[in-house]
Amino acid sequence: MGTHMRRRALIASLIGSSIEWYDFFLYGTVTALVFAKRFFPSSDPHVSLLQAYATFAIPFFIRPIGGIVFSHFGDRFGRKYSLVATLALMGSATVLIGCVPDYATAGFMAPLCLILLRFVQGLGLGGEWGGALLLAVEHAPPESKGLYGSIPQMGVTVGLLLGTLAVTLVSFLPEESFMAWGWRLPFLASFILVAVGLWIRKGIAETPEFESARKAGAIPKLPIAETFRRHWREVGLAVGLKVVETAPFYIFSTFIISYAVNQGGFNKVQALNAVTVGTAVATLLIPLMGRLSDKVGRKPLYVCGTLAIALFSFPYFKIIAMHSVAMLTLATVVGLGVLWSPVTAVLGTLYSELFSTGVRYTGRDGSLCGDVALVEIRRRPGAGRPIYDRSLRGLVGLRVGPEIAGEPVMNPYASIQAVCRRVGRHVEV
Image (tube, rainbow, N blue to C red; front, side, top):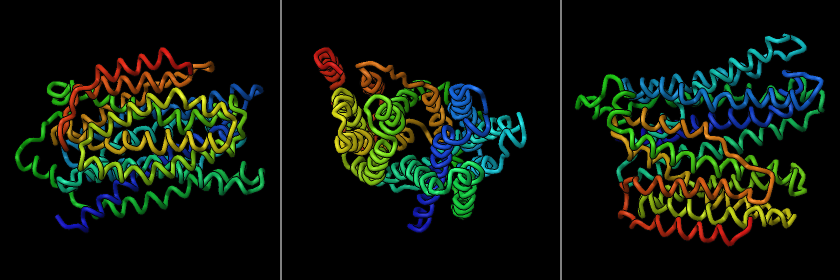
């Protein structure tokens, strides 16, 4: 396969993943600013906010359904066509959100349309991430699978940066203009990203690994049945790996904004700037961590990153309690930018190496069940405990996972857990 086709596949996977997370974070940002007031009016603003955020949560529960549907077609008929469908579905829903009239114009149909479009987004998102990962990894040469698998993972941070930048730009509009039409512009702008993504994806070939499996007759008629019959253990492991990667991300990038403002005494701009800097650092480090995994293996990076996050959870909130903007930024850069990046960088390649080609799409999308696991953060000392708990679960799960690239890792998990628990008893968070 030529270098040009591999590069095109990488770009296609990155654009699709970036659009997914751009749409996701964009909706989350606009929810509190616009949707609560314009689409869910109520005499109690707290009720409006809760109703608006309920629509934000919809894709978490719909993504597994979309994953099952599109992964079936992706494993049966090819990655390319499934990815074209998911990108078109997801992008269309995002653009239409920017066209929905508000409650004052359309009455109850306004929030109803918003809810329906979030369902459609969830279906598209469910098939997009796994397909984008496979598009990259299955086009990769054997010695570069870690690097190729890390590129779609950059879509998380690129999407967050793009969404934050888009809302920041339209926020300079007068308040009346922003609330009337300005907030719609970032959603409508998604059309450009989707058009470019579709153009690139239509020009790529099917992945070589899938073509080889199809020629060998290794494509099952019902991939989901084959997955749970022969790979149920790997599906459970994939769910655990996903939960550990997801929980710290939302703590370091989303929860920390609310925590810093309400508990730490910072303003929103200071908290957002800290997350933006941490996100930029993560974007730079993710491909570097992917390349490193091709040399030392996926498991060492995942284990080291998970253990580091677990240990850092104790001083993290203590550092924020110092009420210093510089320390808030430093803590977020370390947690989100430095420690989380090796965990997310190797996740996609780990998934690809867990499953055979004929059920790889389905097996990977089985991990989306991890997205419905909620991170419970209680407003009291000990806020770092969820990071610690989920990081340990990841180590326990990875204990049964295989090492594909690099040398096998020795089995230090029992001692790691003992050390962490010992530290946890003596460090007050």
